[in-house]
Length: 168
Image (cartoon, rainbow, N blue to C red; front, side, top):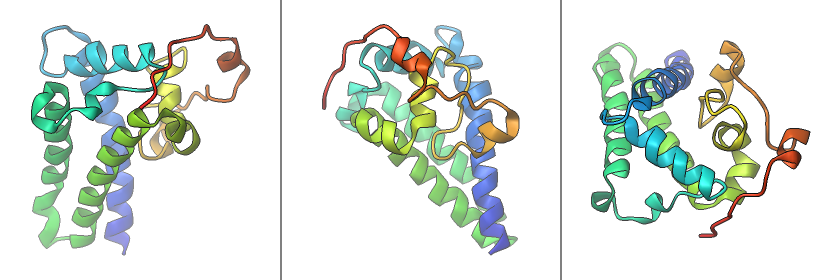
């Protein structure tokens, strides 16, 4: 049981680190493997008020979607050798990876769902500081690291300029 809980916490920390340092660090530079995140995904989501049409495409028709899937599976695979020490930790890593992909995709196909169930992720994309709110599945490590900056439902959100909303 302890291994499973540690796996959940570690997975959230891993999510925070990868999002901050890989997707927004390395990904800020055009032409890098990870640049799809900043230069495609963020651009699309800002323009469409949370929606990203990339998630409508079949996996093999979207380079961005393929790269995200490879990243998610790779993260889970990194924990897999620990199965002999803590099967619960590894199970949590795989469950967390699946949850990440499901939640991220659902939030960008149904922005109203995202606002209701993962407002911290909406804050990441639509708030004034896209370099905060790194967690997708749960904001635990954003709170621990001091990077949680609420936007949804605040006065700042009410004052923002209107954007074009694309419905699914």
